[in-house]
Length: 319
Image 1 (tube, helix red, strand yellow):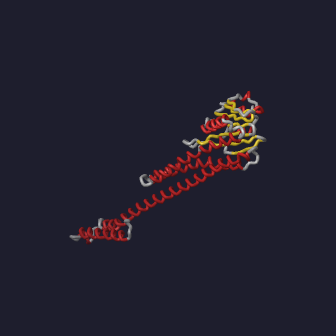
Image 2 (cartoon, rainbow, N blue to C red):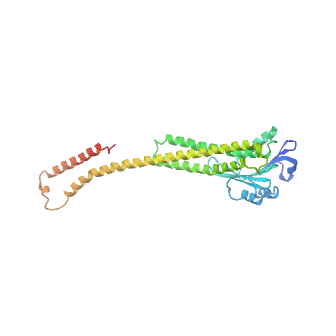
Image 3 (cartoon, rainbow, N blue to C red):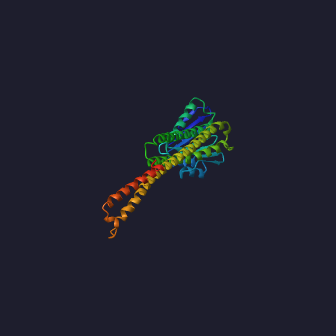
């Protein structure tokens, strides 16, 4: 599907003009949105707009890293939209010049729809024509970046809940949840950091016409991405601290178990030795003929075991 938005020379809004009837020189600027395009519609990127073949190839095939390329008077931007539930990435491509903005995405995105509705509203109110394609591009980028915040806030809420459940769940379950949260944070970082670097290039670019008067808007997006990056780093440190704490707790529990087993084994070692000596089947063992030998050995074993328990207790091994 291709939808178009055009601002005329009289600053009036026109919607859904077919590309075949659209003459760029008759309008102040236009926005053409390629949403879930067919092969025939995708071919118009090169046939109608005459975009560079490398840029068109980036749109059609492999998922690209966020970037900014310059082709004569056209700037080509690759942006990433984020699914807040699955944390999967969808590519959004923007072709931007002074007279037109072309957005291309293979799936329908709520962020693009929201940006479109906002531009239409501003245009009907007569507030958008002066901002041109840069204003529309800013709106798209702003909506995409705003979508990142709920993803990170959800993870932070789960982190806070995880800390509260640390005393009621097993260490194994807690460790699995920590590693799962770290994996999701890594996915977010792989999206947000490249977008941050891209916005830094946009803010400091000298090739984008009219960018100076919109610099404050793009800087605001860059500040949001900086904040997101800092939040991710802080959350990753928190998960690392939780992981280390759980590992230490688990090690302490294992040490306690091993100490208990060691104490029990140590107590029974001399008792086992005595039982082993008198359990041998030699014919000449004087003690075996003693009338009170059995009871004497039992008393010796009880005294020896009790003495070792008392000694270990004095040394704090049972604490």
